[in-house]
Image: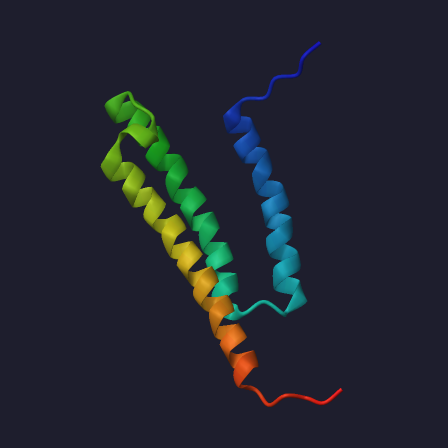
Length: 104
């Protein structure tokens, strides 16, 4: 017997591990604030992508990937999230590099 799971169900289930990741990342207190905002921004991307995909299906009878203006608009939020993560960690690395070296 083969178990089949739809891509939509898999997408929905993947949110739970990501929410756990965010919880631990936030609780650790060690993640640069801007990078943490970027990781949370990924949820905004998901929140925008779902209704955009539904709209593409209803209004255009196409998948989101086939409606360029909707797809690009949704992907903007993922791009923004990625930029925030990179800039946040880059700033943290630069701050560490500028700090005086400690002797061990």
